[in-house]
Image 1 (cartoon, chains in turn cyan, blue):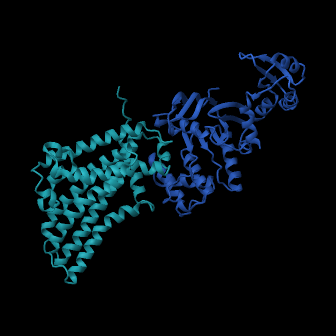
Image 2 (image 1 turned 135 degrees about the horizontal axis):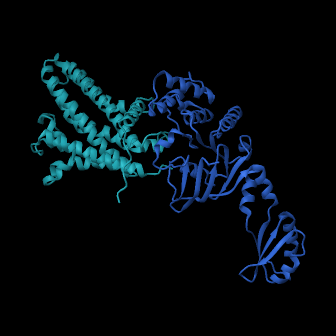
Length: 263
Length: 307
């Protein structure tokens, strides 16, 4: 018999999300998240400085395209959820602070879902701000000549960052609950399985997040290695796969969390 | 009177390590001290009672309800863990506000409540220092504060006095006694008897995962001193030894065990008996080869606690 999942109450989920949001911005937690999101911005500043010095001649729009393709949708989109997903419960269990949450009148399902939601919202916000800052810096190189084009593209990049955070975050939350070395397993998934898309036969690639995310991006914003390998995919189907995958991962994660002892 | 907390034949194993072994306990309103040496199983029992871990066998109930998978119970239950864990980046006020937020309490009322609790446990609500910079005693106070936030009917406090300075100890002892007097059920663990005696006379003695005794601390003390002690003796000539022992005024009973070379002696004056036994052991006609006190556990636990 499959034991019932703990009840999930929307109000409790929101409270737990607010808690995680607050925790993400606390002094001890915000450093790593801000550092990760600041790196591409720093890179943009560097490119702008090199451009001003005459050492780089690329157009700002091209530089931004390259930055989005190689840093945001290749690395940051997976590394940030890897960090927040695998540590969502594990970091609190290791620090022995999880106990304070488990003795509140919230089901473990509500708690996990809320913590995930709060962390995902915070990381999505940081990603969007980071992309916007990078865009402002790089498009500013040419006096915002290509700003019109990017006004249409930026929301798509933001949406992909949000969807990627959701799908990867849910997957890595599950990894964080199931494996004793979640970071290693997460890295293997992120930079092994996910980057092996061009070599995966037939429909196996449907079981990668990256394949579905590519449906929302124009080809020039995809990493070069994937551009040729990915076939056409409908955004609606891709959205269903991503949301379904996230829901399945979180459901299993809740089932695991609800049964686990935290001595 | 219905007990607030009931643990019935509770066992818990961590792999091959036994944390609790058939512990049974009933706790009523007021303060109850859970006493035992380090590793006795106090924290394991409290973790089971607070729903952190499940019992491998047996059952626990708090306020007549099972604990595991019953989050609504935590509206009435507060828990202060033994681990020195706190959210390092938050001040104590931020910590308590975050805990209140988890139960939907926000705004000025929540802030007022958090400030009152911080003052109650002896922390300054206006201190914005992150708890990572707190002393151990201050962390203990913050931990105690989170357990009290919702004014629970049942409080489980695991070694709450650890690391506190003398003034903090005194204040906390007074607080715990006060909560008990208010009619709350407070189960507080410690491995130091005089700490518990300062809060309550009602104690449960725990050792090797079992509840050895439960009741008034002075009655337990008297009981331990008055009760018969059993000692197992292996010897070459049990009948002759039995005849000699039964003449001694310190010996209240002698019986033969299944093993024909073994005698079980009961004495109410263990100290005098062992003095005499030492002399008898030197007499070759009895051939005493083994002396094994059968019920030293309780005595040794108590000796440990009162030393």
